[in-house]
Image (cartoon, rainbow, N blue to C red; front, side, top):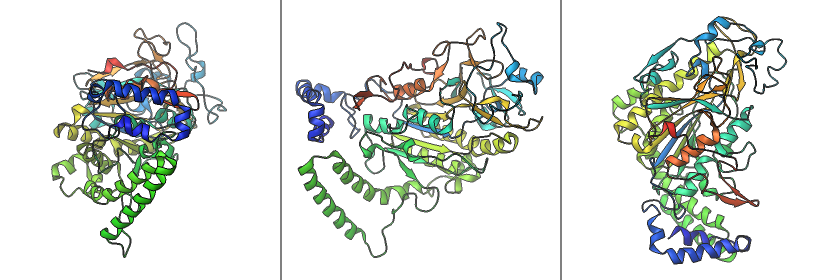
Length: 503
């Protein structure tokens, strides 16, 4: 069915009268445009909005490797050699040449009461790699090998300073819960090219660093005010990838099919009476669940993967629920045209014991991330698959708690942090944006603290606008009216596509 007709048919009376002029106008416009409008809609995608993509996309699908808890940028990707001579100096006393203070961002209550904010230079060695000469920590030897495949952005920033608001903000565009996630927006706007797997899939693998980690809430992959069929489907780390994937004892496939047919008939009758679009969502989800009984076990089995591919991801790939196994699953999902995959790797909240916990976290993800990029490339998928790696904010250059030459902790820091992107129209071998000698503030090309949105500073809204852009979506034109507002992933404040990292 034409998505425009499906959308209009699913409107309840309340929706119709609330959006009457818009609904009638859309119907009239669809009639006038006829086949020319249909030509703008992807012929292979099902369920997307008419007119999307807005322009030719560079990527058809995306993988978001989300490091929940905030990686330490100056221990991994943002080299600051001048800090060695400032070991244990109180950051609050440091000033720039013009006399302005270096510390100008909010601090949390976890460190605000400290008598000193002692500077903690990274204990890890850095070296330059690739033709780009990018500086990468010894903690990421595999990432270092692919710097010419990725674009590193060192000038990300956010207003949020605590985990839950910050991770909600970067994933949904608001620090307050209740809005659709990035993957849900993509599902809603672009639809699916695989009828046997969900459009948006999520994994939450195990980790080996800090034992206790921040909780992950399902709203991070929720659909908010969009139809619930657009929410992410989370695969479990243990047992069946999806609950109730197997038929219960005494139920055979034919019996299950009869039950589904009867439910579909009852739900269709109810839909004709009340016109609630969520009823059609339930029908579709029941059918998807039935198809997933075959498609998910086939997806999750690595029996057909060559040994050299498994070896590339490292020994953990054969352990279900690990980050390595999740990355290989992500590549298999890309082969099957799943639109959006998000992997949330927890344990990056190193308030203490960076020296003990951070190396383990990096070991979890370093080789699998490299393997994923190489694997996508070898399968001819990297050119039209966008890969994003990063967390919700950065970490302080000063130590939380006791500082020694070999160990320290780092508090939350919203002023700057680092991410990387690859594939899907992203330039390889690019390092974008700069921070000061403390990795405390974003600076311009002359090394001076810069105004936000200028000279390479990239807000998280800019990142989301860029992700949408690479998939053919103008972030200002994808919106839904809710609570009297035209709601967008990037909100109402200015956002710009990060063009210097795009080919």
